[in-house]
Every structure is written in structure tokens, then in C-alpha cells.
Image 1 (cartoon, rainbow, N blue to C red):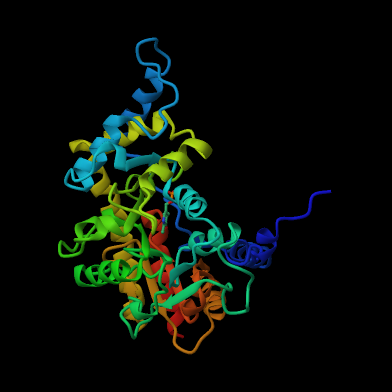
Image 2: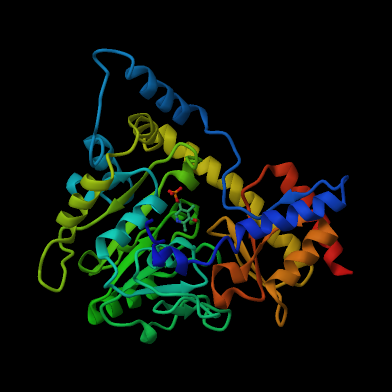
Length: 401
Ligand SMILES: *Cc1c(COP(=O)(O)O)cnc(C)c1O
């Protein structure tokens, strides 16, 4: 018999979302009349808007015609690659630097394959789980130590440092996963912070994997929406992004990764060329239907719909933040991101989670699930129907007692 992959043995099994689901089921079983509302998951809830829907529908119809049929598109439809560069990067990238994917998370997994077990990983703490878990899966990190995984550098993002890490702790020649606006903290890095990040990366030989999945939620015009707004970033960063959160494509599946031609390894080889090799080997391209939807999302009408949808979720976020502030609970996020990160000093995340579930019948996400520095925090997600969010917000007042 084959032995189990030791990297999989290293991963802690189902400690966050399965545990949340278990606790929710347990509460529902003992309170059969409870109307539980979830502000827990990062999954979109609102329907795809009409113009983008039309793009998807026409994309599907075309495949059923001789003239419109298409098969494998490898790195993506050239029109979409160019349009992404034009819309999000002021045209500074050629189509060969923009790779279309079936989502940002999937590309993060493939980037881990690209950089391999020998490249140490550093993360913001707390962070989106795939950065750490995927690093463990490919052997770039070891087993659970009780505080984190061996070999991962956790850079705490706390209230005290404004949710931006101490870059002097970033290891040389590492891969640094950096997400802004951040999931779970909702904090968005300033131009000065990203400028400092790029300077440190260039000095230390670090490659930044910049996750911009929530860029379209930025409303403050002073905040950069991409790492490629910062000089020098083309020599030290790749950017992953997605239609999931701005266009409601969580179930459609479409994203992209930008790998600049200037990005090189220590030996001078091209990272872009290797990324092409990886995606050509273990990925055969995103759905042509999804890409037709993506093209529609990036024309004038589609961009208006992206704005409308993200405004809707930001409206939810404002309601949640106001409800928490009214209780004197300190929080960050929700202004340029759909997450609110609420602080409960001196308390354990899971205890707060249980209290909110029992008193308010609202499901949240315990901050400790995103990394050691997340303890004493709760993540509230703004993805939900308006009536549910309003009901949940009114119930949060019960925490006052
Ligand atoms: C939701 C999310 C993504 C998007 O992943 P897809 O695979 O494109 O759906 C990427 N990064 C972060 C931080 C997210 O929260």
C-alpha cells in the first residue's frame, strides 16, 4: 500500500469552518425555533447583474455555433488579457504578463507549486488560510507546533501596529503573501506602507504574492488598488486577483495572475516563463463561458455593475460596523473591504463566537482561525442579503447585557 503524504499529515484537519458548522448544527438541534443568520463566510450571496449575465449567456450560446465555437484557450482569451491590463493596470502589461485563471485561490496553489518546497513562506498574521495551508501541503512548511506551523514566518498585524506588519522581521529570500484590502482584518494598506513593502522586498530578495481580491471594494482614492502602482514592484511581485468578490463569480470561477517580465530568480531566469510552464502543465485554462462573462464585466456597463454590487456589500458592512460601534466594540475594516474585524480584548475568539451565537443567533468567524494573532478577534462578513444583515445587526444589541 502507498503511505500517506506526510505533508498532508502535517495539516490540522478541519479546525475552522467545519468546527463552525458543527457548533451551528449543535445549537440548531437544541433550539429548533432559532432563525440563525450567518455573518460568517466569505461567500457572495447576491445574483449576478444583468449585463454581466448577458455576457455569460452569450458566451454559452456561442459555443453551440460553428462560427462561435472555441476549445482550449491556454493562458486565456487574448482580448480578456489585454482588457484586464487596460482596466486595472493602465495598460502597463502586455497580454503575455496577464494569465487568466479559474480563481485566485487556485492560482495561489499553483504559485506554491512554482516556488516549491525550498522557498520559505511569510504571511501577515492573521491571513487567508490557503497561504499557510498550501505551503504546508507542498512541504514548504512543517507540522503544527501549537502556535503555528513550523517554518512559516508569521508577521503579527495588530491594533498596535495599525494592522501592518513589522517588515524588519521579513526573512530574506522568502515568498511573502500579502493581501490588501485584507481578509480577515479588512485593513487596506496605504501607498506609504506598500512603498515600504516593495523597498524591503527588493533589498531582501523577497517575492511578494500580492492578493488583490478585494481591490474593487476600495473607496478611498488615496489607497492603491494594485501593488503595481508602486515603483519597483515589477522586479519583486506577482499579483493574484479574481472576479469572485467584485462580480459575484464565486460559483462561475474566473481570476487572473500578473507575472511581470522583469521578475527574475537569483540565477536571472524568468519567473514569467516558468509560470507559463506550470499553468500549461497542470491547468488547461478558465472556462470560455466565464471569460465571456469577464469581458462583459470589464466594459462600461459591467464596471457599473461591479460598482453597484460592491456598493451593496459595503452598505452591509457599514451597518455591521455601526452596530458594533454602538456597543463600544472597537473594529477595523468595512470601509474599503467587506470584512469587519472586531476586537474583544482579553477574550478567546471561540468564547466570543459562542456568546454571539447564543445571545444573537448570529454565526461569525473566530479570529484565531486565521492565525495566532487573530485570537480575541471576530470577523464579521458583509456578504448577505440586506434583510438578514439588518436583522443580525439589531440582534447584536443583545451583547450589551
Ligand atoms: C475570496 C478570496 C479570494 C478569491 O478566490 P477565488 O478562488 O478567486 O474565488 C482570494 N483571496 C482572498 C483573500 C479571498 O478572500
